[in-house]
Length: 269
Image (cartoon, rainbow, N blue to C red; front, side):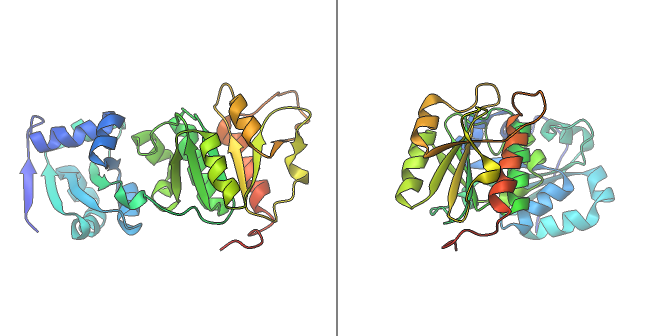
């Protein structure tokens, strides 16, 4: 494959790729995102993500030849960068100098698996979202539903925090959590709204033998009133300490563990 060398930070191809680093609007408009780092880029390739452009610095070429060789075989275009030019694409302090412009199209799934799933409403912290996705994949959750004004799943911070889980875990997008519940109600899912309320049903006593949607809300305000009302039941994490609530990532992790520990629900495929 022909490989081009870029020495200037003013190069138009480089500047267009850099826009994907900072702008969610550009990512959505182009259907592309930027992955950074040797392992993350390799995870994208091995997960079947299309790599439109591979950029790597001269230093990276010396340090990570095996990673770059694998990426070169899959990338549609390859660019070697002068080290100072590579800084334009980096969202980290100590960059490895490997970047892939990837297609977001492979991430679009049409059918929600008939299995346990997690729904997030208006989760804004990219670190929390990435952690939740990583945990969901590790525990075997069937899918994650992003509802309302959640942060961009393809933002650099989410990609790093998810450790590549975003490439493999089915993720679906809904304008609101009630819209998601309506779809899953029709499919026969039971729906739970996670709340820090004393009158809610303890998650440790819930029956997860049937496909379940577990809804978790925003870091500061929790689930909206509409979200609580549309779910079949309110559920909570029993806490013996003095803390009144947990952050979104911690709550979601505990709830997913309880939901999944009984194994696959009856009828799940």
